[in-house]
Amino acid sequence: MKFDREKVLTAFNATKGREGDIGWFANTPKELKIIVGDFKKAKELIQCDGMITMPFVAEDGKVSMFFYPAPYEYLQKSGLRRTT
Image (cartoon, rainbow, N blue to C red; front, side, top):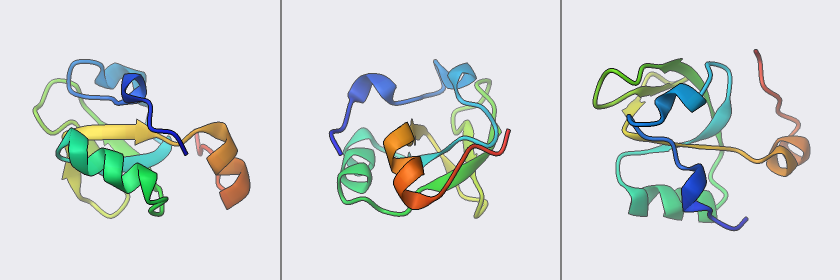
């Protein structure tokens, strides 16, 4: 999967993320690019708050500065879907 840095969500554009979205979480852009490129298992976004520095919370409770929503093709292949 090609990494598109324009799709990366941060505290500045966190409102584009919605609870229930599936994607990848990281605390640095470099780490996020590696995770997405390695096809690590995507997780569900359970909380998104653009008013704080670490706005994204994954289903496992880990907080992150960056979120990369999974593309539709990944969701189809994985049998995953948005929950909201």
